[in-house]
Length: 125
Image 1 (tube, rainbow, N blue to C red):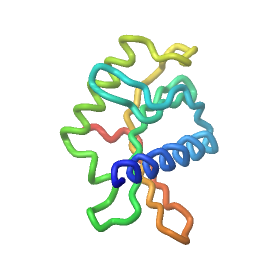
Image 2: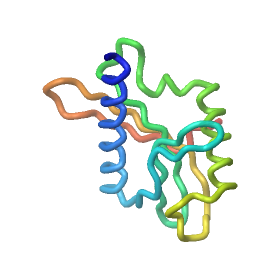
Image 3: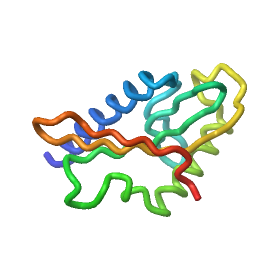
Image 4: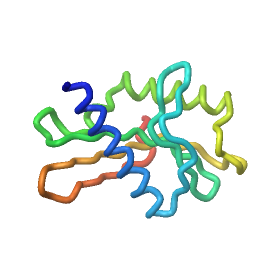
């Protein structure tokens, strides 16, 4: 049951993320894109720049901030998955690429309050 609950929370967070990104001028290119290294949550484009967005959704901060879950191992996964996706070609990407960014989005969804969304660009060191 817990796995289904976590999946539902993650799906709701990704939906909010896609909506937020669209509202801020990004065009959603792909969601849940599978690569040989794993899955990329949301891929968006704005002004020729491709943004791969890792979405972390939590109900609270009891286990730390959602962004803290993007550790060195996860960053390496994102780097490899992004390179694999670019090499294979990203469906829906119609323009030439001027830049590539790996970003993160934190979504806190507490009962009875509006979600708190934080978007951080270029998270890789």
